[in-house]
Length: 317
Image 1 (tube, rainbow, N blue to C red):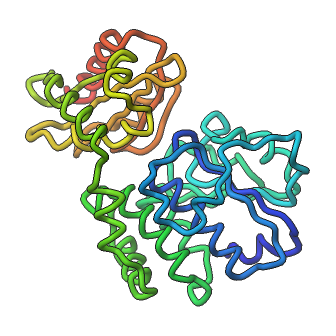
Image 2: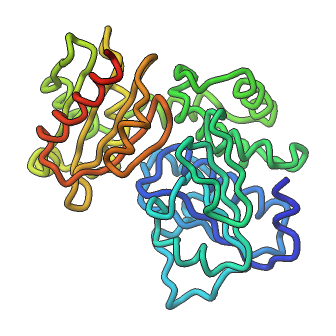
């Protein structure tokens, strides 16, 4: 239980991964709220890179700092790394802070996690989300509606609103317990999962109108260029959910979406039943889950997609 980890510390830093998604933001802020609610003597700080504005529905989201700056921070007694399977994926410049902390903990659910990032590694690849893993480490009697709301948001996003194969019996048991805490589940689902900004709607429409099918309709793929992002005035954060819209194309097994991030192309991969996209992501220095994974590439997008299609085809033979 996380309560044991929090004993005898006076300061705690909480980090997630680069380009935070719902599970990353939800799990980091859930732990933040749990600590502030129950351990008032611990000075706690969340570090999160830019995330969707809709996530600010969560308590504590306005307290998150986008970057750990060593010059203005003393080493923390403890650091927790949430929803992150490698130091290369640590966001907000947190790798330095984690390595300097007196004790550390990694709570995650990625199958690609090496289980050695921190002193204590609580990693359950069978779980739907880091939020589900975190829930099992908390004292249920100490979970407030603020903490529960963060956990619920994370689970909703990493299960695709309970559509993805990662959703299990225990997932729904956790969700039931969170609803009993008084979570406004309808608002969280509607405002953070199903809603898009006007710009996101326009760029998603552009992607859908330019997507292509391959491998006899088993793969749908698309990409946007820096010029496209400038035209629609969007950032990588605005594009994070496009892949889940692409995967809705009927009859497809794999969805592939590429978009520019920091001079490279971010690769997002999703599969429905048969293809292990984690194995494909590893070919690009990435990883994730069997049905959802990602990586980065220096290749032009058409070349990267060509390589991805070859790797998908190998698994479909």
